[in-house]
Image 1: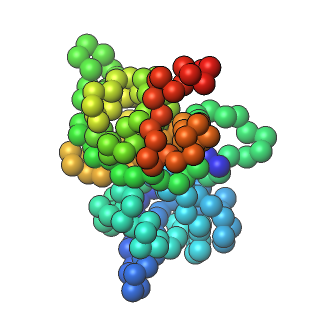
Image 2 (image 1 turned 60 degrees about the vertical axis):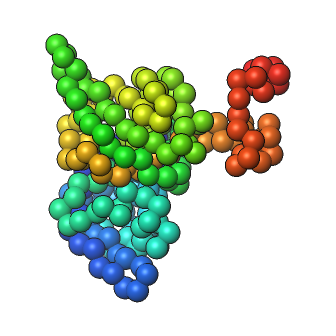
Image 3 (image 1 turned 90 degrees about the vertical axis):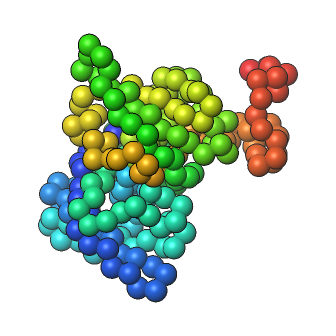
Length: 214
């Protein structure tokens, strides 16, 4: 379990392919020292298992499914990735519930400075099948970052980003067209399933929520 509060930005220093699997090696001056073999770590929002650790790096194996479903398809040596260790049982819940189970990849459109302010607008295109889970002022994990939706226009989501988030994550390294990992609020998916039984064919609607007393 993660919270979407990024602890370190690492750098991809190696991608080794062996058949359909790939081993991703990431430099980490801080978090690698806290890892043990078999431990979990979120890499740009993807929960991975550390299989090889040094004082300054760790490696994790990527299945073919992980490679194609996530933003790792754009990963090259030198790419920056957001890192977060699992939440401790006695820790503070700073963001929202993030499982590290990516629902799909969106498309980075822009990170624009807001005129007359130090903040930014982050624009991301999300897959149509995920749009029903994203609401105004709701939580959305983008590249593992717990963010709050400020605007939705069709399948484009806009999020307000403060300078601290830009400085502490990989957002500034992204280019228009880059895929980004998305994990929607898991509570929305559970509510949909409980109400309809088949989340794929019975979308959650305002009318159904009202009828159920929400």
